Amino acid sequence: MSAITNHWNKMKMLQRQLRAVLILFCCVQFHVQSCDEIEDVISRSQFPEGFLFGTGTSSYQIEGAYFEDGKGLSNWDAFSHTPGKIKKDENGDIADDHYHRYLEDIELMSSLGVNVYRFSISWARILPRGIYGDINPSGIMFYNKIIDNLLLRDFGYMEGTYAPGHCSPPFGNCNTGNSDVEPLIVMHNMLLSHAKAVELYRKHFQAKQGGTIGIVAFSFMYDPLRDEECDRQAVSRGLAFDIAWVLDPLVFGEYPPEMRSILGSKMPVFSPVEKSLIKGSLDFIGINHYGTLYAKDCSLSTCSLGADHPIAGFLERTATRDGIPIGDPTGVPDFFVVPRGMEKLVEYIKIRYRNMPMYITENGYSQPPKPDVTIHDLLQDFKRIDYHKAYLAALLRSIRKGADVRGYMIWSLLDNFEWTSGYDIRFGLYYVDRGTLERIPKLSVQWFSSFLNNSSHPNITEHLSKQHIESKDVRNVGFDFI
Image 1 (cartoon, rainbow, N blue to C red):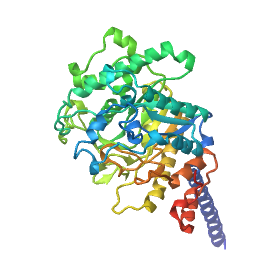
Image 2 (image 1 turned 60 degrees about the horizontal axis):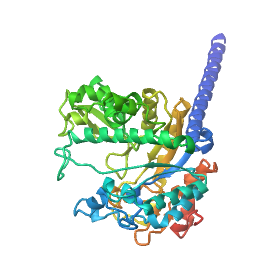
Image 3 (image 1 turned 60 degrees about the vertical axis):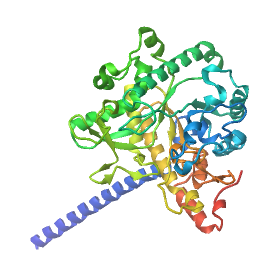
Image 4 (image 1 turned 180 degrees about the vertical axis):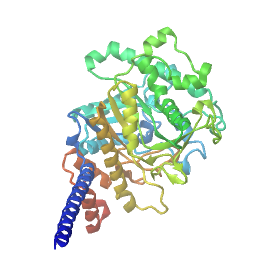
């Protein structure tokens, strides 16, 4: 009887232990689900007060009016008219016709609820003959009208420039250029030009206008391809050649040591006067970031042609490891969806540059090319919504770790001319009908508007999908037309 009682007591104790384990397991499951839900319902209110949310565009990609009101021709005007250079031989002559529709586009942004707009200025519109001619008043007037209308709606705004380059084998086949040397010269002159512009702005305008001036750098994040020290060093070189090349001189007055150790005397040198001018010549850092790649060392390993050149940092950038991609593909071959890369890149910049104020000036998604794609497919952009939710969640984690990030700009407001890809690659929140140039909101417009107004809910994607299923007209799904 005693043995039976002891056995019964042991069984009861085991049941209690199992019950405790089950309760603990349920608690763990609940905690994990709660974390996922927090990520899913990320809202504007979770970001610091005064944080800026906006969209971005670029002059050549949206303006059109390529030869109107005294504008000169830019490099891209000439390049895009060279047969075979652009997919389908498309160009930016008309683009999204923003030059004539800028008020409509500002109204689109206002209806979204954004409070900052990052755009660029076409210097061919301001200085049609470069340094050899006069300023074009019509060009000045156009950008003044944009700024005035943004200020009427309490927008902040940012400006930037972009231009094409030369090349040489094995990096490409161009009519002219030296890819091993020219990038060093171009960057050097660009940094000095930036520093001079900052000096003039601070001396003559900053006190009166209260503006800030910075620079934008594009960068991937990198993971080591192999669990080896040489590939971890390749990651460091990749970041140095991507972002420190631009930022180190402006913050510290010197090019990054990772570059100088490889390029040696090929690196340009700042004179004492130039170093005094350039050091500290920025108030904030702008970051354009779209994805993460693997980095493989090429100083001790065999790599593809070009990766073994000093100008490439002796590293090979690749998207796959053992045939498996680092993340989901997008419409751009090197852009893979890896949200943790945003967090890691911001942390790198925070540490290297002593937590200088940062803005994410570009971050966006384009869907992979699809044969016979329909407007239905393009407007139902659930993956774009998922992309931005995931990257915003990663950015929020960085901010909670202390990173001084002050704004996030989606690329792009509109589908536009995406350089050599023409109009087939689409990053926009708004679809642009190439025949009529009508701006048609994608589902991401409603999501972003809900996010900005703190009205998004856990099942916003499911809710939008249900609206689509119940609607007979895809172009009226869940949108109030403007």
